[in-house]
Length: 361
Image (cartoon, rainbow, N blue to C red; front, side, top):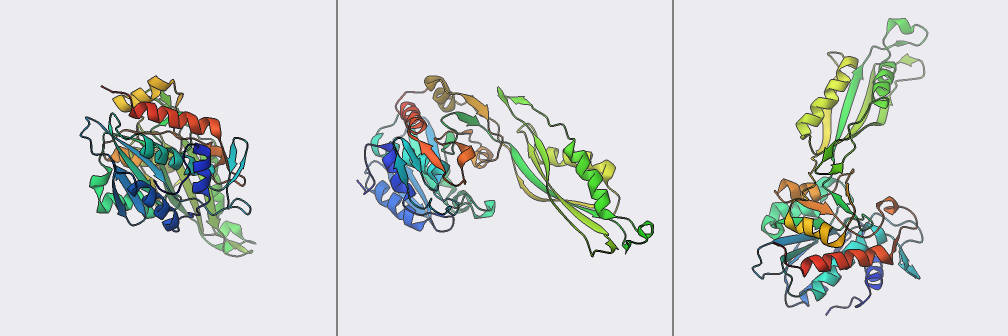
């Protein structure tokens, strides 16, 4: 065995918190995890950059992927090291998502002959721009390591199942005007005033709440940035509005873009511009897969839609249904004093162990 604690998931999580792993600086934690996984004779282990993949090779009819990211955001002062008081652990990454990693390590250690083959994926750089993601690196260099029938991401869900995820899209809207002196504004056209009308249309937007595979999603459209202005005495001739759209998995990215453009169209002129600057697709819940259905039914788990975006969408794009299921409260992620309580940590560990040791048709 490696050097990580045995027999107590909270102590194991605390040990992982104590190894700093801010995005792009995960190597030290990866080395600890690699030593642990390579000590387990029933697993084959591959390292690609700072990504680790450990697999059973038992020839089972199903293969389940359990995945989690190793990085954290930079710590708030005082959150650099783990602190355990009773059944509560605090420290950077405790909730997002070193508790989930601890569960994966514990399962890898103790479930030697699972009823389905298991792939444990520890990947880097999830907390930064999507292009840096360790999953992207694995998909480009060793997609064979990610093959499976279903996937579970250990993102914090407080031991509920958050199925699928909404897509996300950012659009940059450039509104044109004409410059003039503010003493004679009628000689120009104020682009920022035009932006006000667009912002009001978005502020009064009524979101869809589609029910998909029993999960209620809730779309959203928000202005997240406004830029404009030339000088204190100049009518501005340009305003830039950045919009974020969260869209349910019954829309494709093209459908979602068309929906936003239709909403904006009454405000736009021919010389205005609308550009999609960032997009990540949605993922359907996928709860009809027998492994995921067994996880929910055998443990009586609460199921809800994932309103944010997570890497379940990457697995869905590979034709692999995926859900989020992990310890910790997502609302505490990235906050000062981030913490994790023992009960959801142990509930997740028990539910996943039951899944890996129960025959699923």
